[in-house]
Every structure is written in structure tokens, then in C-alpha cells.
Length: 308
Image (tube, rainbow, N blue to C red; front, side, top):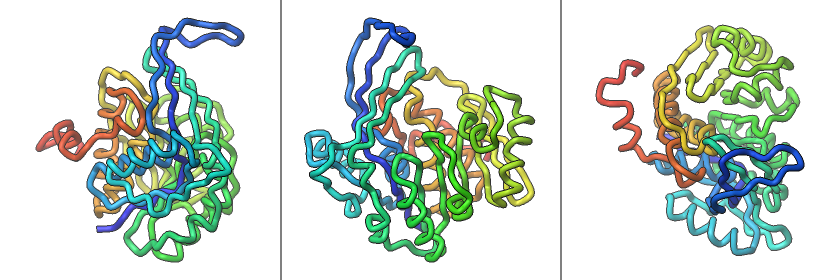
């Protein structure tokens, strides 16, 4: 069995709940303010670790109260923090989230996450069979160095290009599996997408596949997942659940996918499993705390899930 290494952000999520999102320049009354461990890197690492795979997180925390709380939480979830550096000169990353009707708006202040460097990722001892995961909440030079190191070791690389931004071909050439949502796909493909038909999503993803020759996975929320690669495509049906908080759903999917691939699951089975895990995540409040364990995912899939 391989291991999962996640190079990414570690944040404290400050969540304000309200009946609706304010318009620009408007003030609305909220109902609560909540504090949850988060950050895309931490979320993905917790998702993988809770599913029973040895998981190391590479990143930075500030030397402050949020940093201490996050350190304790991540260790309690079984995440190896030996590659996380305390950074006294910067505050711990923070996300300000407004949650209304299960939808969210997010403002991220990077703090210590913005200090993650190629030197940080150079300490990772990856090997063949491991899975290296990253996202766009740490500097791009660190991600490139991490994936180069993974490639040289024979590890699988997974990039979640979120928050959405344009990235260069040099980085994309280092990616084995690209996992993105509809908005992020539209940005990379330079088309506008919003709840388009599955067939159109596949056509747009094929335009990326032609240039990247990699596996492209597109998460579509309650509509499921589409993945293309190796001359075939997979369409995984969405699971209808009552969503409470969608903040960590994409990260749950990525972490679960990495954990399954590190455990030598087929791509199809890993996609089905990750889709089920994400459907559990959205039914709970918070990002990292909402990640499921293997028993919960098995209960959702059932002994003879038709998609497996």
C-alpha cells in the first residue's frame, strides 16, 4: 500500500451563518459564528488519513492560537505533521466563510500558507506507489517542485486547481490526474460553464485531455463525477442528499480519491468511493471535521453497490 503526501494550505475557517448572502454593500443579520479547521491541504489530508491511509501534510502554520488549535486537531485525525513548519513571522491562514442555504462564499487570507517554498517540499521522501496531492492555496513554485520530486520517485500526482486560476503548461505537464469542478474546467478551457449537460462537460474536458494526455476528473456536486483518460470516460451518478454545508466536499473527494489510489483501487472504483465519501461530507457542518471514516462510506455504498 502506498502513502499520501499532501502539500497545501492549513487554515482556520471562521464561518458566519445567515438566512441569505448579502448583496454588495448590504448588511444582513447572521445567526452564528463558528470556527472549524480547514484549508484545502488540511482538508484533503484529513480525508485521506481518516480513511486509513498513512498521510503526511506539507505546509506551514503561524505561531499563534489558531496554529496551536490546528496542530492539535490534525494530529488527532492521524495526519503526520513532521513536514509542517511553524512560521513565527506570519499568522496562520484564515478563511472567512458566509454560509446560507448550504451555499457558501469564501475569502481566504493565506498568511503562513504563502510562505510554503520548494525547500519545504524537498523534505518529503516519496516513493513509487505513493500519491502526491496539491492545490492552489500555496505558491506555484512549491507545487512544481513537489510534483517534480514525485515524478522522479515514481509517485502519482493529483492536482486540484482551486481556487481557480490560470496555470502554465509546465505545471500541468507534471500532473497525472487533474480534479476540478465545473467552474475550474471552464477557466482552463476558456469557456463559460454553469450546470451544463454531462455530454457538453465531457466535450469540454476532452479539449483539455487532448493537450494534457492525462486523466481529467470533473466534480459536479449532486450531479456526480465525470472522468476521462486512457481513451475512455467514466460517469459516476450523483447521490441525492440533504446538503448542510458544501465547504469541504471537493476536498473530501480529492482526499478519498488519493487514499483509494494509494490502496491500489482501480480508477473507477476510486471515483465511486470518493463520490460516496463527498456525499457524506456535505451533510455536516465544517470542512475538515466533516470527513467520513471507512465504516460510514461502506454503509453508504452498501455490500453490492451497483456502481462498484
